[in-house]
Image 1 (tube, helix red, strand yellow):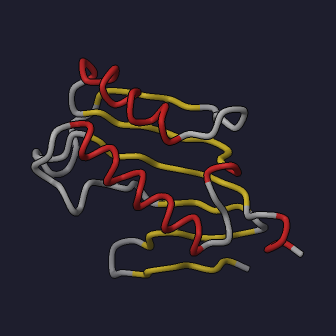
Image 2 (cartoon, one colour):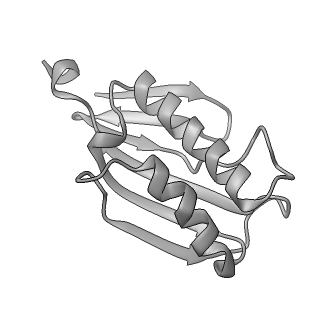
Length: 121
């Protein structure tokens, strides 16, 4: 069985199947004109909220893909990431440069996580 959250005509924000949580690419909705640090905090906040809604959290990340409009901003993005990610729970991660759908966006993040044990029962 697949449970989808925030289903739209084009995509769902999240899907859960077999205890695995799949998030759509999260983008800076609240600060689309912000710098990379502001946009990264915005995106990571979206991820925290969606994971919580799915019965997961950043301690249960299985993999992360980060897309940056300008790979030269990786150091500034990593500074925010390093404050957010839990030591000892850093997931496998890929970071690449990509042209994003909105030219104001500097970052998009795709996450796969596992639901917490208390949710899986």
